[in-house]
Amino acid sequence: MAAGEEEGSAPEPEQEQEAAAEEPRSFKDLGVTDVLCEACDQLGWKVPTKIQVEAIPVALQGRDVIGLAETGSGKTGAFALPILQALLETPQRLFALVLTPTRELAFQISEQFEALGSSIGVQSTVIVGGIDTMSQSLALAKKPHVIIATPGRLVDHLENTKGFNLRALKFLVMDEADRILNMDFETEVDKILKVIPRDRKTFLFSATMTKKVQKLQRAALKNPVKCAVSSKYQTVEKLQQYYIFIPSKFKDSYLVYILNELAGNSFMIFCSTCNNTQRTALLLRNLGFTAIPLHGQMSQNKRLGSLNKFKAKARSILLATDVASRGLDIPHVDVVINFDIPTHSKDYIHRVGRTARAGRSGKSITFVTQYDVELFQRIEHLIGKKLPAFPMQEEEVMMLTERVAEAQRIARMELREQGEKKRSRNDDDDTEEAIGVRNKVAGGKKKKRKAF
Ligand code: AMP
Image (cartoon, rainbow, N blue to C red; front, side):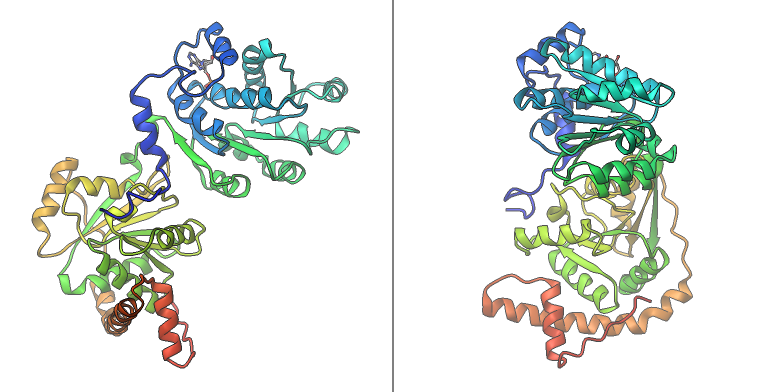
């Protein structure tokens, strides 16, 4: 069986969502409880919107959610319904906090909470600037279930309103997070994050996935599921696709050149076989790059280990085969390199779709050797455009060949060692172990080479 598609690989949110979005479903199908389904019905919400189809089931499962959706998509319902359902299950005061950038949005959100929650007696309060703090303090003293607030005024109350705290909070929503951060509410958001429990559910909604939003996501969310709906986030416009036409024997040197040229990015490099994935990972590590392989000859645990290191940004380069990477949610990829050209053109689309996600920009570079011209033409035909060549300084590439040749030699030796070890242990292996073995062989003198 093809590796990576079995043994409970982490589901890829986008794929799930596409499938889900095709069939219109009811709120009940999404797991919404009867009383809330009735509330939706009374509001004239007959079928859930796309973001609701995607976000509600995962939120009901207790997962953190990143929703890439704009106002008008029904996103308020997408976070309000799971919160109200959890509140029904475990009633508690000061249960949820919704942070939003503007007063207007705060009131709109509050209206929806009231409308959806009126039959179950939900109380909510809006805490925004421009309104006298005394009446807000009184409202807070009544301990509403849900607070909808702009960050600045909420911090005022957290610091100055006696008896008010959010230490028992169960849900945090950051709505329109990109706007919150663009309005320089970062300090306030940080202060709020510090005084609410870590053990909570967090939903982050944003129209765009900016650098600041990503930072916030990393600071505030735990293992979130991404739900993206807007057609605005199609990859095509933001994806710069290039090719390089090179002699097959210099592929490694060109790869190293590109990694140096685009240093500071995260890379996903596709190879056609497990062996070449492993070999290239070893080669790059020998040259000081933080590269890690992901292929079908690794156990599921090791594959997930690789992926987690890459996700945690402990490694900046993930080398993978198509099969091993399928079905896994791989975030943060700035550059996709087709080191070995895909034999099926459709795989090309799948591979380059790993970057330029959710409104971010990204690059893809496809290596085309003298043997790959026909396959490359098929890809261009499929995507309906001619790709530009990636600009390169050939002389600089050639200056790398000597060091690359040395690293290739060591990588071959390591691959052999791994093969022998594997045969003797009848177990699988990974690059990191192999490097460890090599270092031991070399008398423990670990030479750390700088990436050049
Ligand atoms: P939002 O994006 O949350 O601001 O929602 C935009 C508008 O869509 C609001 O007026 C909601 O009442 C409405 N809405 C939300 N969900 C649904 C739904 N499932 N069906 C119809 N309208 C909805």
